[in-house]
Image (cartoon, rainbow, N blue to C red; front, side, top):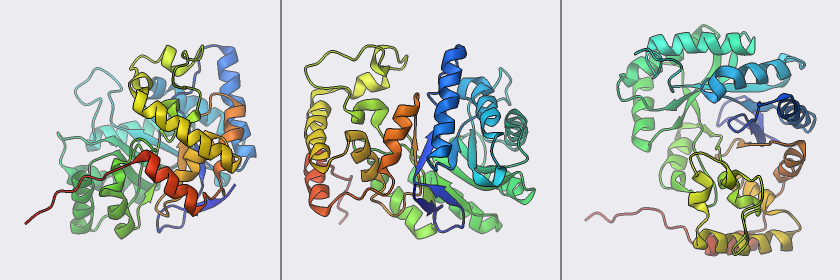
Length: 324
């Protein structure tokens, strides 16, 4: 496993991280498999584990904390997020001082930790002044409850407003963002990557395999694999990605991966890590075998000629409007 700095900051994170969004905790067998996956990740050199208060209503935080408790606290980096409703009350959601303080304390209690290494605003809250949100996050750093803070799915304008408020109020810096980023969703390349580069902000993207599209399990003209996410996912995110255009890209990308002697998953993860602004890639692993396959992307560098072929296949065109 190789490690990178979190943007310009001193924190070192493994190139491959483990997220808890899709962790299945239903039943003794599922929980034990998830526990084995986390332990396999740690043994493979993964030191960054991501979670959120909204995952399974706090159960994911409690589970992750119980597994990590077996390890020395200084040996791992753990994060969580805040924003989504955690109850029926008017203040049980969002990014107000009240909700952030209460939920951070609850997260620390769930995980049985004294502090989080990273804490993210899961979404933007239009009902709360951005100065209030940035101030309380800075205060939590000052109090030692979090070490670094960031945001997840925020627009370029929202990120810039946050940076402006931080500068004006002389607050602790915003150090990291966690956006969605993969071969078929490259919106952060339009503006966000440059914003992060200019401000020393690390990027730790989620959904790097596009809900499983880039694992190669879904192929054009073939039935959905039994038990796969496309057969049961409630919001149908993966099903919406299974277009003829995307499946044709998968076929071409799989050939490049094969020629390089790696799996499509490894190619997709290594492709994200080609950007120096990427600090770590947050992957999901429902089984230890998946984790063992994904960690092979750390340190794998895609040759320049193959990168050129990939660009031709993806055919990405950033949004540009000529002015004047």
